[in-house]
Length: 116
Image 1 (cartoon, helix red, strand yellow):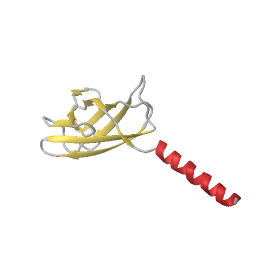
Image 2 (cartoon, rainbow, N blue to C red):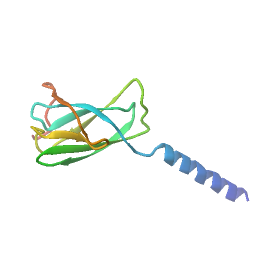
Image 3 (cartoon, rainbow, N blue to C red):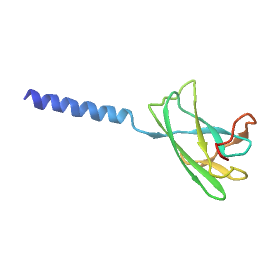
Image 4 (tube, helix red, strand yellow):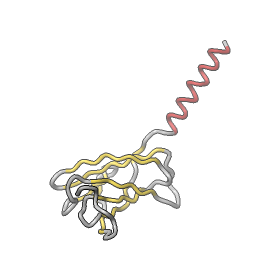
C-alpha cells in the first residue's frame, strides 16, 4: 500500500510540474535589425523566461513564433535573437502568436550574422 501511495504522489507531482513548465506562445513587441539585415533582436513580452523560436522565411515575409517557458508578465521583458538566411530587406516580420506585423528598426551597432 505504501508503494502504491508513493507512486501515486510521484505521478501527481510530475503532472503538476509538467503543467507549470509548458511552452506558451509569447508576444513579440518590437525588433531591431543589423545593418545587413540578417540578425534580428526581438523584445518579448515575458520576464526571465526560457525562450525558443521557429522562423519561416519567404520572399514576402519572415514569420516568427517565439515560445516561452516559466515566463511571467511584469515590469521587465526578454530579448531573443533570430538569424535569417537572407537580409530582412522589405519583407514584413510577422509575429505568429497573433498574426500581426512587428515594427523593426535599424541598430547600427548590431553585428550581422556570422558569414553574412
